[in-house]
Image (cartoon, rainbow, N blue to C red; front, side, top):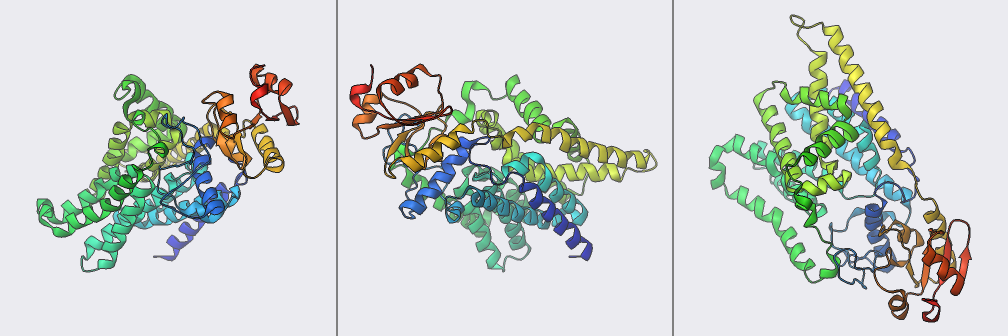
Length: 472
């Protein structure tokens, strides 16, 4: 690696780190806090109750995940991972995601450098490190950035193995990273398309006769299959997921394309200016191996968008896996504008246009993302601290917040983020404390008037309930 490459890469990593330190100490009450709280709660409960990755538990005891009561708080989504080491400190947990993304930045550079040279690699990692959407989500407590890291490591190790199949260490590493990626988030399977291309590029259809290919497939999928089989013993801990496929038959409808292209890619993630650079990068003619690798990667992304149509429309964090390949095509498009042939274009205007488009992309997308950092209901943090201070450590709590477990997480207690059954039933089962930040709710006012108030301010109230005070 040349000295100039090291300088550029180091500068990008420093910039990437600096950007992610913005509001790094914010509590888990920001955008998509409900999903972050689930991941953080599993890690926190491992620390409090003992580490057992085969039986992850979060804080929610309600039936809202799939209609089944979940008194044991089982939570089987991603295989529980690295946030366990960060404890209950929100800042440390966010910094863990930051480190994960910085490692991904380095891996992306090494990968793109192989196919496109150091300049495209540097531009790709620059976009990956600085796109405001990715900056926010790479300081969030979510499994998606970890999956991205494992996918990039998989691509790199798989390529190195195909260079020399006698280097079995790369084969083993590829299997390891494939397992980690799929266990972290199963949609990683969609990003096997570039691997298929690489194998085909070397062996053609003869690859189907290669025992190593089938061994790789079996060993990559076997642990995931075992994990899914194990999960079936805990049905109450498996959230409903079918609605993520095609809820409302949205796939290929006008709303599907509008939300995915206009609102997400052309708005939140890239803006209209970044989307223009993306299109330029996609249509630019490149050397065949570079083009095919990237286009097979893009194909995997498009398949993911189509299969999980409603998931990608409902949740904007579902587009996190798109960032590496989008960053690559942004880089290709930007480099193309810088290198316009002088025979047909005014090169200086091409460079100026590229710079203006990049600046506007950052300006427009930060405007979209800046609200993600806001704590829209600070009262849940304040109330959570009061609960943690005033109630017994083993108390179960009702913290109604439209089903969002972020409020319950702030209490550092197990319980219910939604009142999914009569209060008398909850009291009889041992849950007698309720905390609320909805001071205007008539039901809460009634509880305040007839039950025991433990603490009350203008922002929250903590109530101890008894069967006798319910319904009065």
